[in-house]
Length: 290
Image (cartoon, rainbow, N blue to C red; front, side, top):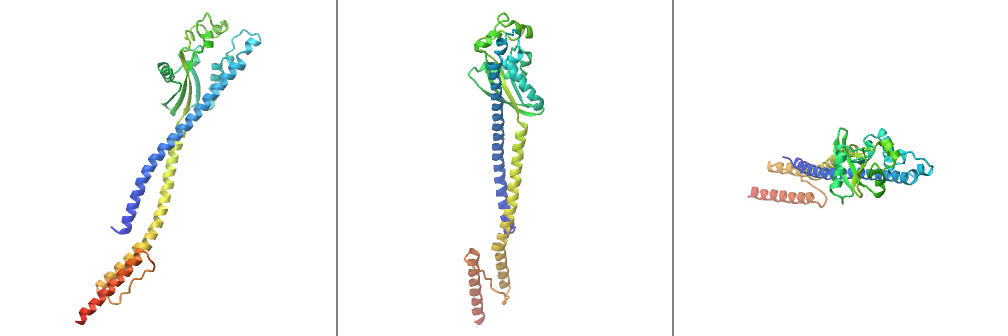
């Protein structure tokens, strides 16, 4: 195996090994960054939901009473207002959702799915837990969910303790079969924000591929330059000296000396080689003279 082939093989193997390790580490970093980005978006959506409910509670909920209406206005309920706004958002972005669900809701629209019920029961099992991040697979790809517990505050019990205590207008709208029996400070549901992971993860994988292609292209250019330098600075001088040595060994007296200017190792080797050749030729002349 020639020297340049050995050099290319060693460099290529070292590069491939380094590239594989780098790709694995960078993929892990890119995927982690993708999840961090998705979680940040989920927090923004959750804060938006909180802001909508806070505004509804402060500005909209008092309006019917202030205007002297005794009808039950669903739009004045914070959960209903936030849920309706984000339900409209889902028409344009179906994989994004903000849900305020309860195990026993007044509005059956707020009844949790099986996966959402597992989240609520998780908060009920661990009352000290204030936040939960989960992932699940769907036909459209992985979904990340950020969840926080919904605890029955004292003001909630005005409508959700017993049908007898609830406003009659609410009973007329939703009936008396659902949404009652809540206990003070009980975890009754969860606020769940769901954001798709498929696109950020695909972008992370694409970034890894681009990194590999870029590094591979740079490596090929560098390898070509190194081969040129190796050939002209090392391989060609050694090959020329080997040819001269072969000619000298065959007794060709007109073989020229190899001269290499400079102070590098090849130049030093050429000086030593020429001295050895002259010494050998002198020794041969002495032997022939005797």
